[in-house]
Image (cartoon, rainbow, N blue to C red):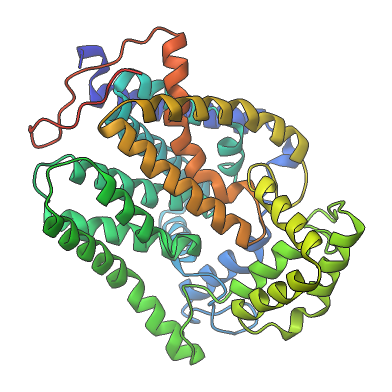
Length: 430
């Protein structure tokens, strides 16, 4: 790697560029769009954080156990509020500092992941795509839970790629990766099953590990995950008497995603749908209070499919598509669909290029595709929105950079090595 594209210099460049674009975007936003529009922040994250900081316990404004969402994001917000109080910094400034730190970390981690797959120069293109990606900029205008979630998730993925490039596993890295995934799950419960995806990627990765090494490493990843989430599960069980899968909001999420054509959005908009689809959605809404578990919703939709297969299939296809452009408020969806098209086409072309190559680049493409399918499926289960696809959109930028690199005549880098000095699987040129 040349002097000018050394890892430290590139990381500094990435962070400075990310901050420059982030603050320029905030400065250019009209005042009416700078406000925090997150309903979850106002109704749950902020009040729970303040209750915890005040010593009232982990409770909602209604004095109930705060189990609708896991505790990761409220804990971080409580830390921000505490730091603001201790230093005398205005809370708004402390929150902006928290956001800026998250932006720097997840952009730096994305560069580090990309550099291991496509080399420093193409990784800079990938990170530039992500830094200027309008959806990323919009999410970072307020303290959304996606921001720290991306940091912890990318830290886990980066550690996994570092570990897999070694000739022999370093066991503590298995625990660290699991801990990162557990931390991500405590911020956003959508990560509940992602260990299965990473384990599949581990078994597909072309290195010299034996089956025994891989099996032990997988067990350590699971153990690290469980160690992190176990205290929350035990606390929630003690307060509610039930074992919850990270969050008690499963039923609400499933129902919200099935009634978008009859229940107004946060911006008081109702999605236009055909009459048969609206009838099914209305029946879900009418029975909402009878659903006590996600299984109840699944059984209701299965019974509906048996009698009305066409509208149920239409709902499914609608959710398949909306995962790539939909918003909670149902605003800006047509512009978002147009915006997404060039990114996805570039990423598809890059995945094809990576698939045709050998070694690490193809393995990274396989892992990314598994993650895309996982987040796509999870997004379709809930209120289907593009923000749930944010992690994989970031990873897809790595592959979107490959065809751009060919257009810009970026020479592919050779001779990449793993961190312990042993020859790594060489990525071919695209």
